[in-house]
Each structure stands twice: as C-alpha cells, then as structure tokens.
Image (tube, rainbow, N blue to C red):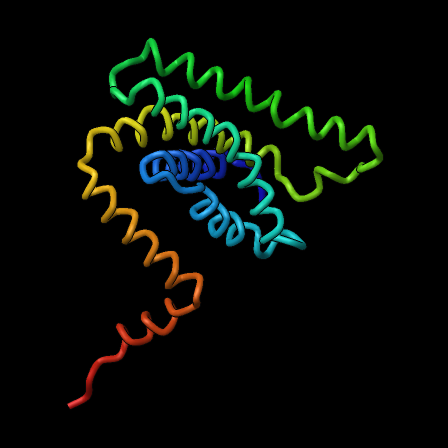
Length: 181
C-alpha cells in the first residue's frame, strides 16, 4: 500500500468509523477494521488477514481506554475540558501499555514480535479512532435511548454474522435475480 494523502485520509476515516461504532455499541473495532484492512492488503501482502488482525489489536488498547474513560466520566458532547485530557491520557497510556510487553519479549529472545502489525497504519488510525470514541460514539450512546442502542447492536450482529458465514454472496445473488415472465 502506497502512502499518499488519500491513503492517509482513508485510513484516518476508517479509524474514525471504528472508534465511533466501537464506543457507541461497545464492540471491538476489529469487526470493522479487520475486513477493511484485509481487503486493502489482499494483493500487496503475504498474510493480509494476520496483518489486519494484529494491526486491529494494536489499535484496540488506546481506543478502548479512551472510550471507557469517556463513559466513566460522562459523555456530554461539549465537554472539551474533559475530552482533551482523556484523549491525551489514552494515547500516552497506551504507548506505555503496548511498549512494556514488546520490550520484555525482545529481552527474552522473541525478536520477531512485531511481524504482524502495521504500526504506521495503527498510528494513522489511532487519531481518528480516539476522536470517534471520545467525541462521537460515547456521547451519542449516552444520548440515545437504550432500545435504539439494542436495535443498532442487533442489526450489526446480523450483518456481521451474514457476512462471516458467507451468506452475503447468496443474498446478493438473490437480489439480482429478476423473475422472468
């Protein structure tokens, strides 16, 4: 994947969508990030699925930390005095939380622990993911009625289930068939 301004923008928007949906519905962002990154890297990487999964996991810690803190301290959309320190703490805290195990792994002889993570992709998505989590998803979740959140979660679960079972191809084929006569 070549890094152009368009690519950076698309990866940032992917992070924004992942952070928003993740904190809105309390799901892992991998459900959005992994299929998209796997598709992007399908022709350019040897192991696109492994790379997408590793990158999504690297994104998970800071985004989950930011969303959790935003829920804990309140999800009012206009509270910038609260949102900025939470976002900053999540970024710094996650760097520390991610680097300690990697440093330990290197010291005990695991030299290839970084092989299935695209760190520049994770870093590019991170800003969008934290913005989506702190400023969009958590405040929106606090504003929406519980029943609406349940329905949104249910629809997402069905769509993802259909996609993962491979039934989407059959459904698309059915929609394209027009009765003759």
